[in-house]
Length: 154
Length: 446
Image (cartoon, rainbow over all chains, first blue to last red; front, top):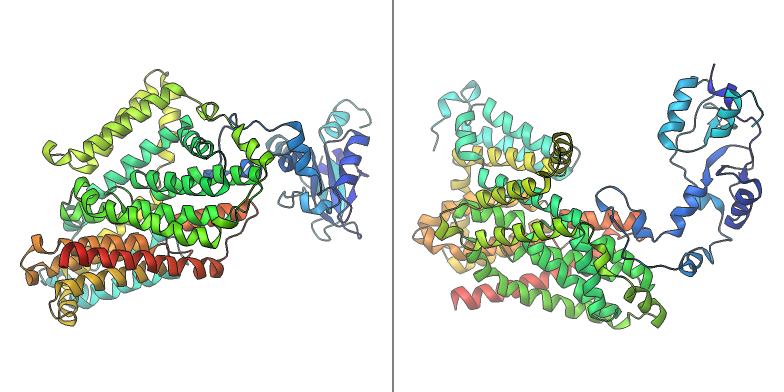
């Protein structure tokens, strides 16, 4: 069994040129955590999701990692308005600017155990991409795995 | 001078063998194609394997374990102290003290950076202050560039003020026996003047144009610095140990203690306080993590470099060079001091100041007989310290702290470019060296 057998073959995607507002709307409408971002030819470009959106809501300094990690932010008292303010004016920007382009997609031949290991390690739904063409083939989600385990449709 | 010549590989002249190895090591460090610790260790091993020096002599006389111990001890102390949030506390407190006024915050954060840098490693200081700066400037909706620029300058200037502020000073102090108090007495006054003088052009360049809306300032004023303290018990313990360590540095001479012993005692005490309440497994985990935060790359870089420099010292290269310098300056101590200051500053703004200072220390030491002994060349050590530490401000690659801030700013979406930084920083660095030059003349030669 490979990754191909548990992936969703026709995932909801978004074009890289679509606005951030459209991407958020898709997440809400379909109650999904993440969306593969593709170009006009269906080639995979990155992953946008709740996790990338939350990063945008935080002060930039808070998203620094490694040695520069700021640590505890208990002393900052931002309001809901402050968070909204951070997104205002950016809603029309292309979604690709907010997508995670560093995440390595899965390949269809990847073994099942390795696929699950990736899900476990990265806590993401993961895109499956043809390594030769870069075309998006499917999407492995927690639900698609559970569905296969329970013999149900995701 | 050529005591080891009979052991040198193929009977070659140790003078030339050591010089070639030294030059190759230097070139490799400057080109930055390989990690500097790897280069220094290879240089050191080749210096021993070629027979220029023996392993025994290299470890006994070449490696300055006082410098290594002081650096490692302070790194352990900082690794534990930073966990309690005290640095965020001070940064937020200082911003609120000036009612979140943008220029006031810039001045306060520069001062905080300078004071921290005087007692801690510069890189550690900017790693602690710069993220909070980015947070505050984002809330104020002001450009973080002037703040980060000032902090780079403040960290290198502040680090110049004390024996433990910057590695060049640690090396100079260790090699010469100059004490913590000597550094405070001779360098802190001029460093204070330089810091204040640097803020003047920064005000005219950026400061007077900085402004923030009342709402933005109110957001910063809502920060609660007390909530930045994540572990009040560790805070008290860390501050107590840090105070004792600084007390130890001040009274090191009458106590007959070397700085490395004091720093290591502080590190051991804080490790004990941080761990004794935990079970063995947790202790092991915490101690492992703390030691993991020691910059071993720097420690091994120093180790290798000390051996490489000892190689050229033993082979007589540095004595030969020292004689040429004395000839050039006509044996005039003031001219030598001023030359060391300016050459060190220019060199340190382009290349790493650590290998430069490691080479200059024995070179300056070799000049002592010409000037009537070690007691007469003290101004030369202050020239070297001022030039090497302040020179780091000249370019973005002049000091590790500069690169750390630039990298962090880049990741946060506020890139600091090499050329724009150079255009502002180099003249400001020259200003600081000009002040140092006047200080040397007024204090030691007038």
